[in-house]
Image 1 (cartoon, rainbow, N blue to C red):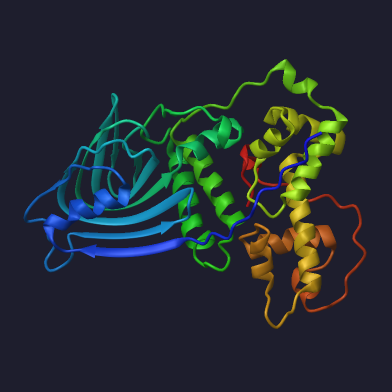
Image 2 (tube, rainbow, N blue to C red):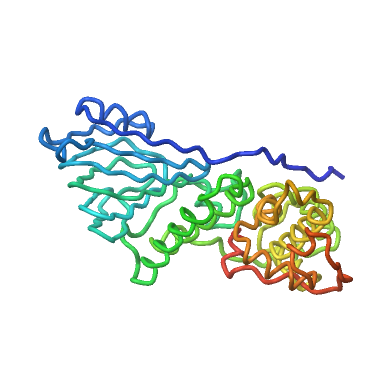
Length: 358
């Protein structure tokens, strides 16, 4: 029997950059280098707004996803090579439009759109635009769509529309991006590898939902026949060995050589929970042990929660109290620590089964 593999949890903090470009001949050069593709950009000569820059570009790079805030003066036309990213934009002023493979996307102030398929060239136009763009690794998006590990996803992926399927999808996409920007990425000390991994999957899921992306792999009879005790034990062992790593449902399935649906069925049938709820409960237990052992003069509840993938301290406190019958702050202060019963972990969001936890 082969040993269970362990994933390394390399520290990875977001990198932040901000650049202003004032010379017309440097705008295209900067964007080509930033996006790793030839954009073939043309910008009107009188694009400058007063004495302001022609381009302002602020980026937060979290590895599997990037969020850019861009202001581009004047009228701009681009015909880029493929970016090999899933890109959606949220325009705050001005307008932008794009055409790719027979699909059109347009976004005015307050609107959201896609402009291209990840692996195809396209044409786009912008006019005095300010926008937020989200760039996602296509493998991550495919992984979330299918529940399979990255090594098994099928690329390229295709989107059926470049505009949100309805008003609710539009609003959910905007709210999710705002949440990731203002909460999960606001404090670098809380942006741990687990938090960033969850944020990337959350953005991928909401983008798939908003723009009618790839569909999940259908279930098969074989999925239900893989629920054997030995496989469940190996799945549990893998989770325990990798609780500190950024793992998702597809990684657990790959470790025991069955489908993601089979892993879900095993946990439901034998443990009355889901794999990701089990993982979340285990991380709560690790956070509990860290709080018990912490030096309260140097460590905080927020830091320990973020270490184990809980970016929102308030939600962590609710889950912690429900499981351990005491607040995490009291545990850190060395207060009363009641006996921990068999209370189940708090349920994850509905999106957890696609590899997302908060």
